[in-house]
Amino acid sequence: MALDLYLQTDASLPTTLENRFLSFEDDGYFWFLYPFLQNISKQTNKEIGPCEDSFFHGQDLDLFNQMIEQVRKEIASKPVIWEEYIGTVIFKGERKVKKIYSSVEKCELEMLLLKLEKALKKAKSRNIGIFFFGD
Image 1 (cartoon, one colour):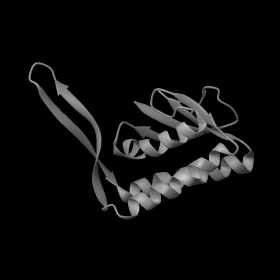
Image 2 (image 1 turned 30 degrees about the vertical axis):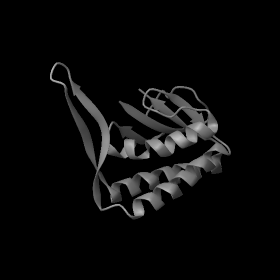
Image 3 (image 1 turned 180 degrees about the vertical axis):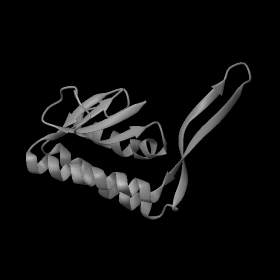
Image 4 (image 1 turned 45 degrees about the vertical axis):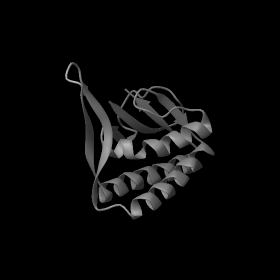
């Protein structure tokens, strides 16, 4: 699973990695941000996820700036490193369930937010958008 973010003019599939500015894997960073991204999805009727493609431009980009503020408020009280729930494994026949967690470092998450913030500024100044490209 991956979700790559590109700066571009439209919702066409990227032909090069040149404009990719951020990439999420199936890890704690993505799953921590997932509820915030889903909030944007609900407001725009555009799905954001590892199996979806979506394009945001214009006023929709303001929602991401609001999201960044919300995330920063949320992580202010978090420890330097925490374990984020990312899924559950079910062992067939054993009636056993195991929850899976992934470490999130606050400073690394802040770096991701800064990259997104920088890309949002570029997109607005160039009148382009951000394309979310899911696997």
